[in-house]
Image (cartoon, one colour):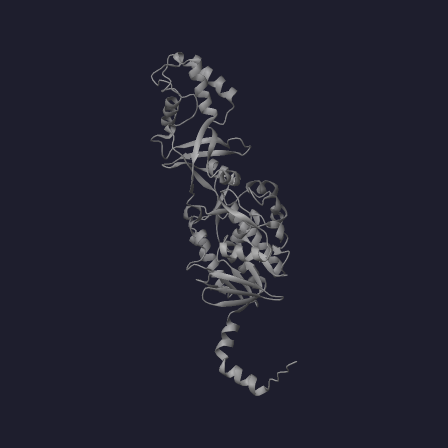
Length: 429
């Protein structure tokens, strides 16, 4: 056995000649490090610091800017949450993770979010569809609020720090970035579904659900949409063929295909099925949200009442004029015909195209206002009361890195506020 005796002089010399290294180590050590300077990262940091002002907290961000998704969300207005406050109704807006969030939403839901922002002097407004925005209509209002609070609470924000390695010790964590190293007592992962970090977690036996896109538009070419870009169809339904996945809402025709609430919801709830089909499949669209029988009765009434009128001039339903004309063309109906001259076969084809229109999808496009991914850290790994890892003490997860995603309307931000709040409350006890 070797015995090394270290005298006081040796220690003194080491400290004297390596003071810069020791200083750097101390500077890069924090009570809490949060990886990800997005919505949930800032929300967790601020809520912890308010209750535990003596903690040394840092937020690491891999890019040059912070809160970038907050900035562009809602068309630059930031859809902070939704007016839907009943947790049982709220969870229905999450294709993945909704049921797991039920108890969490009883703790911190949309009502609490609205109150939180108003307590921090952010005036909010609720639109007809339930979406909640700052009255300023500027996402910068939310960004300025977070940056001001972070400064007030001495939260360090360190950008251009891409985490490439995580070491978990018995009582601490070590983080390696591209240009330096950090250590902390408690670690909160509030980043997006970063491939490097997810791989690090998998190597530590934390289960990861494969990441796939959600909330996207459909690429398609169809004669029905000829020269109709920009037209919106109200109150439609869409269903992925040979599945039970069906959604309702408006559909917007674009240069590339179709988008709008109905399509985005279908892409979210059908993310896995659409991915398995490589985004090439048929969807069934009901342009009028009526049954075949209801549509048939209505058209027969039109045929009787408007028998001497041109079918092109008298729409059977509240549809945009140009869309109605195109629908007649794809149904092989001469637009110069009067209603009285329409055959049973033509009526049958028209009804089918109104209520069961088969549309071939040939790919997807990213929705500019939303960058949502399904997948991430499986919720089975996590104590859902605290968002702490079941395997590693003082390791927490919040926001996008979790296998939780919602539809448009402020629901994704709400999941970030809620999970960040749970982390903050637990740490601040």
